[in-house]
Image 1 (tube, rainbow, N blue to C red):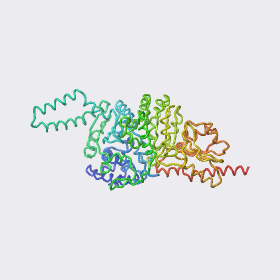
Image 2: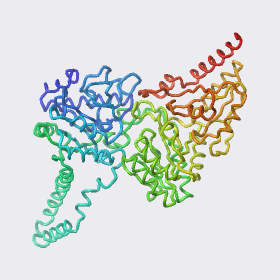
Image 3: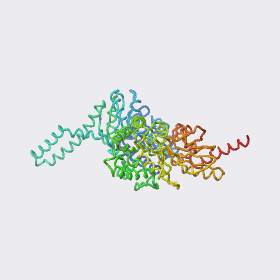
Image 4: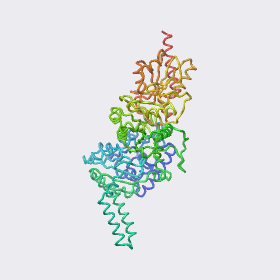
Length: 616
């Protein structure tokens, strides 16, 4: 059936009952491709019917659908024209794992961060066509989503917000909104009515009392699910419809046809099952939120499991917390992804999951720090961008020693442009009072975490990649503020490596030695502060200076090193462009960040300079 859909309107050649067969076909295609390429299967499997219904009822030649994050968008990709086949999903040069404006005119925006869809869709809203924002329950823990809802209700624009709740965002949704219903039903008035009704049923009609109580409980549950959410969104200025069974195509299409003509803010609430149609994903939706390749028959991962830097952090933070009761940990809805899940289990009273609210996470940490606690905020590098202002205002300006742990820094891989953690050096490196570190290996990550928790002179950040942890077979040296570590001596050139590129720099040095070039290798350890006197001493009487980093070169470590030394430096890093999706090793090769590429460029640079001197 998919082969018959060339453009979005072609879906209307099928009857509504036939759409159920199309849904099965779409799910099978998603499972087949994601089992090989990895991706976000659970969310997309759960959203198949609502996307089919939207395509069936909208005119996508003019109407617009904006996805929040984009985890739910795989069915949309299959139903809209793409230059590349769906089988290329998340592979280098293939389809993005998220909506992409460069892929299709039916993707108005390239998106990958939560809680943005309502604002984007509101900007697109027009009286001439319907603007739709498809959001999940996790979106409601992000402040921007409510800013958009509030403004949409005020402006009375022609916007439809589809709220897909599945009781399973990345981790259980937290926050005041998630408990709104419970707060309503906990009021004295409601509970007096509740108790009096129970007593009346038991005392006045004892013979049918048990059955009546069951009926009353079912009515109460319907009341909570139907009436109260509607009241909340109606107060924001929306007409509320739902909640509906998000897998009932007949109900969805009929409802959409009825509400789409309304040229006012409308919210359609649907309830779906995350991982729908694939038993392993239904059973463990968190595991299949973001998945590597897996065996379709049993759902088991086909990827070789190697200890990562996240695993090192997971173990070390628990070890340190055992002897330091001042340590508290904060996650923005991703305790598993950032390695705080074990801390959460062992020290629940010292763990805080604030939901998808990075801005709040940072400011909240500042308040905890003022209470003489030692907050550790673990967030993916790409998501910490969302808290830029709060890091400046709440941490750097106050000079508070909050520890920021930036997982997934540098080139991440298949998740692509919205998830590559390549800007953290640039946006943290210029902040007054900020200290920024990057460990060369697993043991140094442990040492840096200890150092950070003993640091009291302002906020301190540690960045590390999504990669297998390694250990360099060199004696561990004590970490001192702003002091780099010389790993290998040399006279002709010096390579300053940032973070885990230390092993690459050592390999390059060995290859250059075979060409008669003596290279000093320095593990920078710190992006900020940089000790100018130490750096000048390291580079004294050395002609060639190089640096390696997997961050943006503009405003990155190399440029800061160049400013500190006030001399010419050749820097290896990422150019002024967005890094596409693809396996990490492919992208490192693309940007000349592999041992062979760096060796070749440095060798050519030194030999060319020497040849010029000979000619002169």
